[in-house]
Length: 452
Length: 89
Image 1 (cartoon, each protein chain N blue to C red):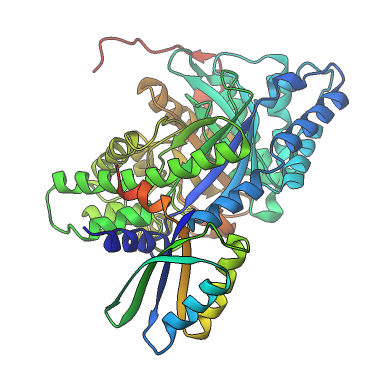
Image 2: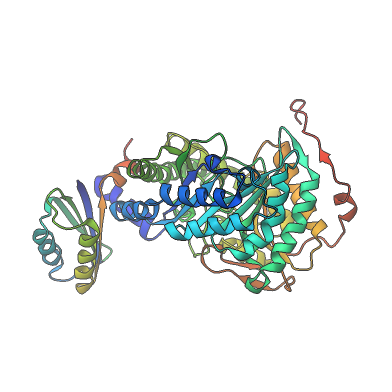
């Protein structure tokens, strides 16, 4: 291929196939912002974030102009606030949430993530207070995202936290009912949460990370779909090769942006997240890739295998293109944020059970799924438990981001707008999990041998 | 710094002159030009040197876009590294 065609290929990817850099996320450690006085602690937090991320948006825009590639979001992730706030004597952390939101608005970022707690084995004082504060915090803020890790492969699943999170999700849905329960779109329940994820709502800055760091998330489902359109009917070997090559190119663009952002901001580069992140725009869908591979409508038999191939090939292609790969890295399957997924739900080919199966082979989990507002909290907890079990046993990250849309029922649709898209309300099992959830306690860590 | 300018749109008289006039006014040196008609679409690529550029890249981008619109073409300017990163090992 000559230079002319290569240049035109890149132009086409950006202009027509919606190639973009989804996010430049600056991770900021707040470990030096603890204080026994909550007010002092919040002042330190505000000062640190607004100083460190002062130029983040400006630099993002500069890079966008220089390379002519859209950078959709600039974001901040911070140390889980439960760790910082519990040094204080505060009994609610809503004020912390408000300060974080204010800091995010001051520097002009799209989201700030890290109103988080890690309770895979148990609660410390701050974890309990933080989790209790989540509904009000999400109600009173716009840019804040929250996440809670309730299980991991080495600790098992904290079923008390699972029960608790079902209730917290319901409360959040109720408090934000005037906006289609949007608070729940900014709340993720994880198992095996990663510490360097640049994507929301689950981003936080782990304690093993440097003081500040630049993580970048690429996107580009449309580019993969367009590449596969050229190999219609060919074998899986060709499909995989095509995805790998495309993923390599996308990732190289991401690495270039990451290096440049790291240099201009004088903040070390952390990781590149290879995830294929869809948007609600036509031509930017992961579901449509699966359909291009040969499934009539996403969710039909074969979908899980197609997704497994896609997820694996994206990683294989991307790993060589970046110096450090991390975060979630795979294919995302958020229902409301993917035009093809929405369509598949409406067509009747995709349901929550099939989505659960799909989460076994791709990154993250049951994501951006709207369910009836009258779903009992124990059912939501049970869905979280199922998803956590998949993650814990298979040593992978899984997440649950459900929206029990207040006052809505199966067949209705809710619209969030922007990147969050719109969601048809999906049915959940009508059978009760009440007795299962009310047991409490912990599910022990799995045995790491005798794998079958 | 070197950049690639792409000009895409329906073919008509005066496209090259419009774009190159802007470039010469803003002290942009053209190193290489290739142009073709792809499915009725005028497609031009230019490799340019921006070392002597007397305005910001953003401003140049805006002017090129405005002037491009007058003759019905889309003009894009990008640092050459994005193409090198994606297509060269």
